[in-house]
Length: 167
Image (cartoon, rainbow, N blue to C red; front, side):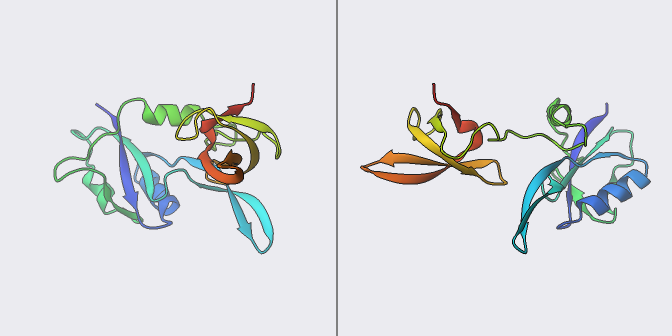
């Protein structure tokens, strides 16, 4: 039965490993997302691996010569224990693929719906139910919210999915 398996690659070697795995006839997948990059006083968006140093290969471990993957250029090895590689749980890769946009980049939760100064409510975690002011978002899909704590304004770093519009 064919299943997805994780492959551990050399640092920044995901694209090279992907190329060589496909060249060998394997079905391989490297999920990518739009990452914010700051360089020389400029901010731009670049395509980056969703899981740095990992990509995924689809094969049947019983009938495919999968050991060839371990000696592929750019690959360190398949993820697993001493025996055959450990397959990914069913549906994970399909879920990631379903979130891809028309350019092939995985769309993650973004805080684009908020503008600096908007009132937001924290929905989970230690600051649950607190009302704060949206400050900004970073490229790791985390946000900064200004909360009133102990009589002063404190800047808090939260996961983007932990805030909602203030009702």
